[in-house]
Amino acid sequence: MPEYAAAPALPLPKHAHRPEPIEPPSPPPNPAEPDTFPDPAPQPIEPVEPVAPPIGDPPPQPTQTPQAGER
Image (cartoon, rainbow, N blue to C red; front, side, top):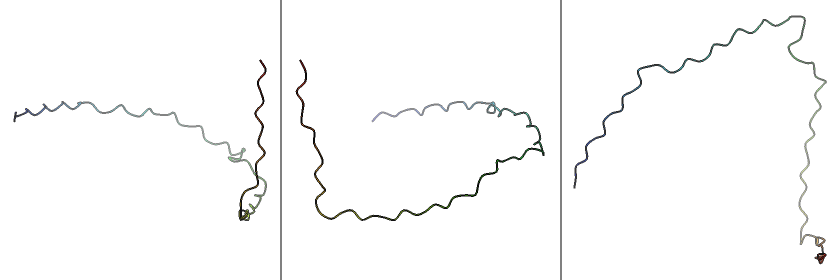
């Protein structure tokens, strides 16, 4: 069985990763303007009552009769 030489270790990069970009500071909020829009009173969500599926075979679905294509 042949003996394999170990792969040489790859040199690690000597530099740090790219720093994150520095965003300019945002302007302070204007106290005369509200930070959110007033919304109307929330509407209550009514729960949907579950409906049991009908028992038995489903009603037959209407089928289209194949039409002969015009030549």
